[in-house]
Image (cartoon, rainbow over all chains, first blue to last red; front, side):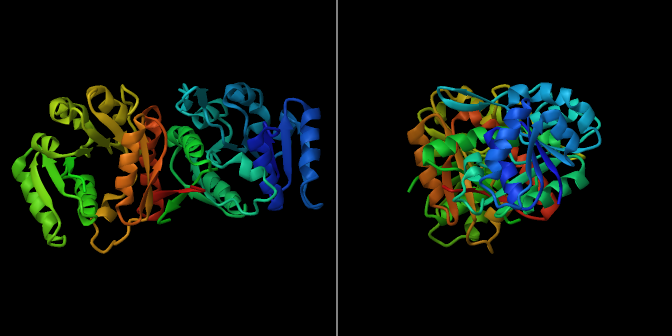
Length: 218
Length: 218
């Protein structure tokens, strides 16, 4: 079991992933700018889980320091500043970036330009002493958080230049019921994986769905 | 049944798609810069199909003029010039763009920058009098061409700003055994769909597969 720290862990995506990893037996920490909010979110999440679930809440910097693996689940507009502030506690650690740089207007979602190419490459640039892997871009937070949903039926595209780190994340993904990790290339090809979330939002609107992806023939 | 013209139809992707549409009963035309090469490719393809298959080969401009729907399957580096040359015969028609702007180096495939954002948006810019839809980016030409493969088990993401045109293409996709068309947003979100082919190439290398995509919960 691995202690997983969710930075921005009080948002839907962070809480949803933390919930599924806690159900899989991993100790999870919800991080937030406000330790009180993190604690409250952790208490609320723990109440929905079996008694053996190990869920704590603390400030992002404490969560980063305590975690063996950190999962970045903040909104894109706070992404760079958060990681710059946490460079020291994240040094030497595996950091999983789930961030989708998206904008929204009256026609729906669209991909934002990122100076480094993608949120994952931005994380790698800001955290030169961490091992950055990108994953969990497409999974629906609504499904992750839904107590009626036992199995989250989706593949998770896992990207990284550090293959052992990507392998570690794939194995973690496989711990979640219904999910499978699929290695999908280097970080230089993360941009389109992050941006594809805009298409899934279009699909969700058109089909009233919580769309995910499966990779065939793998 | 719809007469489908494949521009750049002597390449693997064009011949592969033409083969599957011919098997579904649609008359198909392989277009090429060289009418002789188009004719030879059509003869070769026809020999692998049941006698009722309707397969012709001709120059790209004649194929564009004859087709009810044109499918653009050229390599990206010839994309803009081909479409500029065919603006007149493609006027008023539905044009399906399948082109993936990719580069390759020793680390594999990566997405190229396109001035208009994507190949599909480039087609829409070059062909203001056509109705442009993007589709068929991820399907493996190897599977399409393999006579042992009866069913090509994949979803096809269909993008377009003209909804009736996108609906028409979705219905066409559904004619191919195993395929399903899924509406996946506007052309401004085509870039990441095209670029995702680089990730599928990484997946194919890692898993020795011919990966495709299925959208879950739709």
